[in-house]
Length: 415
Length: 149
Image (tube, rainbow over all chains, first blue to last red; front, side):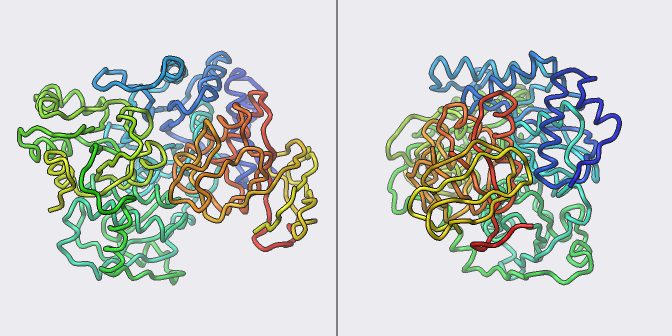
């Protein structure tokens, strides 16, 4: 299919706005071709995942954009980098990698992105309007933006996100089109006990199960009795986008595009109705762990996605002034750090032995001790999915309260 | 699913949208591939993943080895293979990992997908912009010997 371009798009492509913008526009147009998009759509904001160091290649690309004079044309927040620039935590990156990671972070700032350095931009004041088109990267941010805010984005991977931010255009396809935002299956949880929905760890477990069942399809969750709060939706979405390719989910009566099941199915019959039983849930809960029968843990990590201020406050209450006996990492953003410092939370957490990690997280950069057979406990579905491959640690899973009790005693404790 | 045991060969391609054919490998002989991103010719052993993979967290960018312990091909290096992917899942940093593999010279020799995956293939597009080469990318039908439009 030939890509239809307007005057503004063509002038970007021919270099009227500079060589950097032209290179970005070539990437947007080539992606549109791969996606079979007939045209491009104007986007109102971007969230950029490309500033995390995966190797020198990403730094060289960003610096090429800077050399070519590229600048973002829309509001663009930055996802985590590989370094904690606030100094709250330290990591074991060797000198060359540290240098390249820092150059990468600087290059994205030089292109005009905001140094937000968080995977929870939607809790740091970047909340696009319902129905607006945006270009967001970072799988959890994408799924939250689409599902909870109702703004429209595809899952923009590294490099397409910055290309869209520079040009202000994205391929008009996928979740930018209203018809693709309708649910095609029902994920019915009305058979699960009502009390479960109030448990914090219920949401990442359910999200992991949802992600496996959904793949990349859009579904609607039926039978959620009440709005569980944003942090629960954040945990659900992040988990679903880790075990599956979920970019958008709906929860009937909770998320903005799904007042009820019938509306979000667009008046059509669902392709499938998945009845989720208590046994399915228990099975998924067991599968959150990659190691069984462990008698001690080596570390605890929470905050994927980055903790909200409310979650940090809850953490402090749960610790209650005790000391943890294993390394405990609480990952959050600099938008929360200010409040942590004003009300003494940072000091209190650090006195208890908690390492506050800002701007980055323990699964994307080597902060945790290198252990051959380490066991990590987490309450994050996303950490549970990625920690084994990225850190070498095996994973056990529990609620935030379980994580705290286990960190104090040094062995897995479940309420 | 491509079933082949020996070496496979794909000719150099120059035009997106053109059809090329797999050579060698017995049952895979003559399978039609649509060029998604043109690339150099490739003669390599096939590696067909039997489960979707997240490149980020699932493939080590320094070694090209599949690092996801839950993946059926855990421990296998994808460098220099004609890699067929049943699908990709998870993080949107797949392109960054693929770009790094290309920059280090340890990328697959060719990538075959069932559906164009713009997240992953951005890594190849950026490599071309940077002048680093990299593999061609192709689409194959779900069923063996399925002809593409």
